[in-house]
Image 1: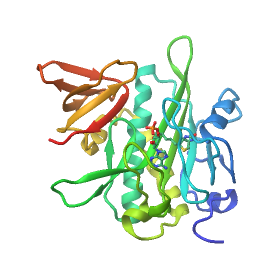
Image 2 (image 1 turned 90 degrees about the vertical axis):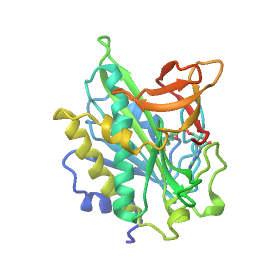
Image 3 (image 1 turned 60 degrees about the horizontal axis):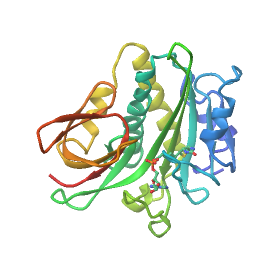
Image 4 (image 1 turned 135 degrees about the vertical axis):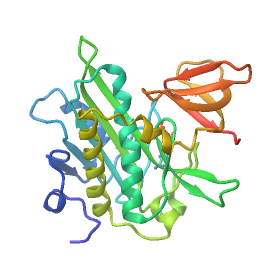
Length: 275
Ligand code: BT5
């Protein structure tokens, strides 16, 4: 048994959480953990907190029909089922709690510094403080189902975290990719990282249930804020260029364009254009 194995018996033996990852389900390979867990979401036999993890996805997905690529056995690729019952717009909070949870687990286990890029990336710094670049180490994919009252009956949160992908095997991507191995130089035991991540996720979800908002912690980790950005909003015809001034309670990015108008962007892609 190595500390990199993610099979059910070894993970269950070390799991420290109360309900997140219970059950914890592992398959060696699958099309997409999000797709499979979504197909199970209507079945009440799968409780809130169910985790499905794999070592390889043949059809891993990003947002908007994009692909998520990772060589077998190199990453954390998993999805978690939640049954929040929250109002629809609060759904963004699942992404907003997951970003800081991933960043904290990465920092705790590897000692690296992690940050967030709006709306759904975890990034690592490259290069000196002046002229620093950010590379994507993790992507989040949230897919929710609403009931007729507009409440979130179920939500599947997918996490793809590049752990031990060698620098030469990183996928070519719009936001340049990195892995914990490529950034830190050391092989990272995936099981310790997974256990830490399930803990940080559970703690934040429970804090929300107790009345906490993830907006502030999330906003504080966003490298996007204070930057000149080009935002391609979902459904928009032309990109919006301006200063990313802040975010609101529901995760929308507030961008001041060059005419001084403030725009709230709910979903889209951002390119950082420097200060
Ligand atoms: C995301 O989408 O970043 C969400 C990724 C979610 C993946 C997880 S893995 C477990 C679960 N099951 C699934 O099927 N998916 C979830 P988006 O922001 O659209 O970014 C996608 C883009 O990131 C792609 O178009 C590539 O440019 C780039 N990309 C692909 N693989 C990557 C990787 N391993 N590391 C960094 N960037 C990558």
